[in-house]
Amino acid sequence: MGCSSSSFSLQNIQLIFGGTRLLEGAKLIVQPSQRIALVGRNGSGKSTLLKIASGGVAHDAGLRFVEPRATLRYLPQEHHLSAYSTTLDYVKDGLGQAMTSIARNIYNALAGPDRVGRPQDPFWR
Image 1: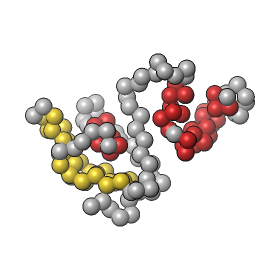
Image 2: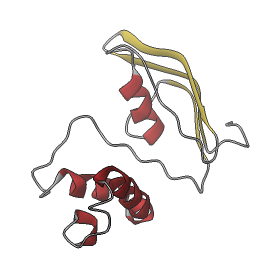
Image 3: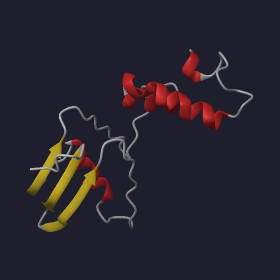
């Protein structure tokens, strides 16, 4: 069972692929409104852990808990952009409607004061 105060948790996650143990005893707890960063060497299992978190990969042992009202999004490292006119359109599609306003704010913050909210900006089309 997950932590009752967490939006999401992984406890004692194990994953074996092709006879190789990729994850053993992995733990991740995310509280409501918390932002996290996973840092580690290439090949250490960061992406795999996030795929398990999002439900995209089944784990061999351990517990995965997602608060019923929580929303998890995973943006894969392998991008398939051919169906999108811009990278921003790809990101917006992955975020869903609920997150588009947050993405708009981030875009505006990065666009600079001379471009914020202008009709030619992608969010205003």
